[in-house]
Image (cartoon, rainbow, N blue to C red; front, top):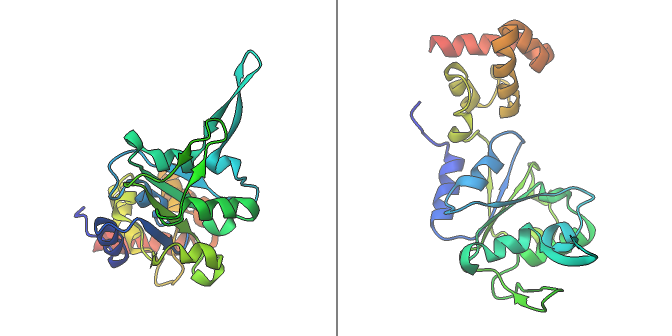
Length: 237
């Protein structure tokens, strides 16, 4: 399949290539936002953090951990590891479902995502002041379809926000060939509701063992017939 990116993904590539280091991706789940955030315009492995209502500050910056023989040592969390990156230059931090963070976790995220001139954190073990490296970038994703649902202080840290309304072409590469074009089209049989790529992955796996009709019924329920019709039409094209 020729890799042609949807306009929203072209925007993401262009923004990251232009040197913007704070980017927010929003839109329905299952379109490859995290997939792209972990891979696009980054030279090394990215750190990942998934927000929940129970996320603590310690899970972002680090915590004391037992080191044997009654000793404890400080283990840095993904936020500070991304600040440091390779040789102190920084790396990519991907923050998923940022709208679900609350309490002290949100305050810590605001610190981690702050501008390089303002962001700093003190290691409680060594007393060292740590700042984000020059190559540190952070991509935040949210399944919200409106930016109004995000805390204003968090939204302010991301002057560039891109709405994702189509799957990323790279995220469909693991699907069987006949599913790739329908998956990239997003909607099902004229419906406006987008289908998550996770549903396509599940259908593809089940189909190999159970056949297309039963797999569609298990994954799509009442929409199974419409899904199979859409596949047939796509095959004709």
